[in-house]
Image (tube, rainbow, N blue to C red; front, side, top):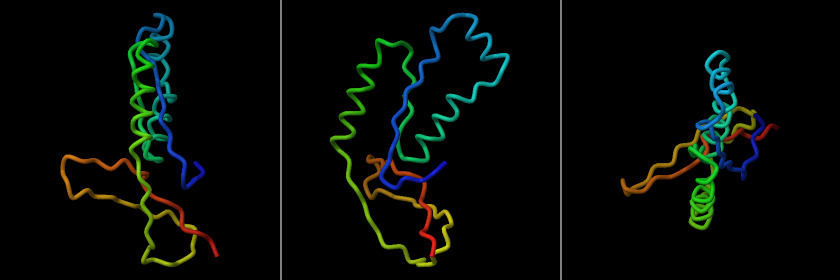
Length: 112
């Protein structure tokens, strides 16, 4: 997956309530679609929503809009200045236990 530093994904996956044939095929053949969405949202600091039905999407969109109105950008200067193009993990910790930071898992260092 290519890294785009400022991009976050919020995705939805509706898996319940589908026809019997689709649910049966998901049991017979491993379905990687939802797994891929989960990986994408985790890597970018977003979130995967799994509403039970289409009518629940309005609530999901309201929650995403509310989150977007309350986000902050953090910047830092890494101690490791090596320009090797390698992946570097980042961890953000909150001093207030009730708060949770939604962040991406890291970044790729620039190449020479």
